[in-house]
Length: 152
Image 1 (cartoon, rainbow, N blue to C red):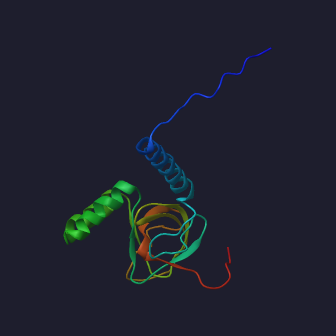
Image 2: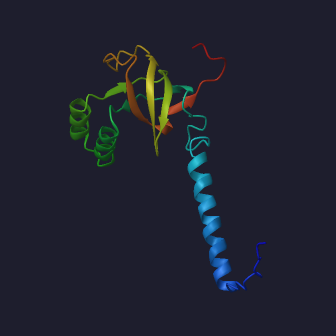
């Protein structure tokens, strides 16, 4: 027959108990944040979740080929150096999107969205540059939701 020993007094103290509780709550908060990061909408583009079809807002916007190109072009735009911004645009194989261009959101970033260009708007002031079907990174404030039924 097995002998069951009496419970040991494990008084860990109030401070240790509160510290342990805070650790558990912190771990739970981190888990909730990491598992729900993509299901919440952030930024002005509210409904810009992966798979959402959206339009590019007025005026035309730069669509960078990579995240690094997006950062470089944004840096020169902030410094108001148009020559360096244009150089970075050309060197990185980035392009311009006219207002009204339909895009599909592929991924979320902080302040930016990875999109695929679905249809382009012919605007004589902005060269097309063969953008249809290409993927790029664009500022999240450049996108507005499509109102009405989706055609794609």
